[in-house]
Structures are given as C-alpha cells and as structure tokens.
Image (cartoon, rainbow, N blue to C red; front, side, top):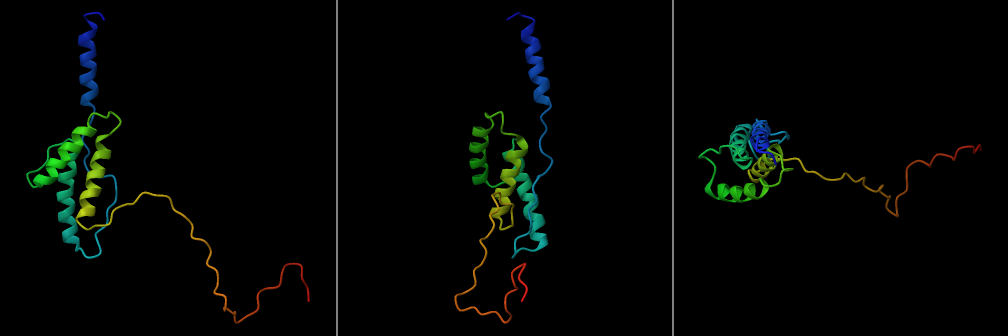
Length: 138
C-alpha cells in the first residue's frame, strides 16, 4: 500500500463515520396500556426514549436504572461490532422492550393466519330453508 493512501483511507473512514446519526425518536407506534393513564404513558415514553438512546449508543440519562444500564452495555457492546445492526433498529428494540415492561401495548411482528370457517353444531336447524342450487327451477 502506498504511503499517501493510508491518510486518505483514514480520512474516508472518518467521513463515513461522521454520517451516522443518532435516532431522534422511535419509528414504531406504541399505545397506552389498558390500565394506564395518558400522563403515565407520557412519563414512561420519556423514560424509555432516554433508555433507548443509551442502548443505541447515545448518551443515556442518569434516570436510567443501573441494572438496565449494565445489561444494555453488555448487549450494545456485542451488537456494535455488527455493521448491519443499525442505530435505529437498536433504538426501536430498546424502546419497545422498555414500553412493554412498563405495561404498554407494543407492535407484535408475525404472520396473520386466517381462521378456519366455523362449522355449525350437529343439532343446528336454520329457521329458513337453504337457497336452491343455481339452474334449478321448481
């Protein structure tokens, strides 16, 4: 490698690293829990945003609990080495976990399955006769 290409490579790495921005908020919708007031939801949202910012690699607030900070530092340290693990994904994951732990409704990812058609009970007798088949004239 040529000597002048090393500083150029370092400069390029710094420019690319400077382009990464911390998330400004969650990209998922969370709804208040059934037994929570809107004021409780707002307070939990504020706390969970701070917690998620710390998990995503930003500056966490002193309000974050020590146990959450210890577990989040272990998880974020293991995830920060993965280049495909974006800051927004880490932020959203931490935010959803925190809001769920606080008793709120969070999105659930999965496949929607259609329920099988309900069969009538064996003793079912309708009040009216079924329609005549097509093409049948009495």
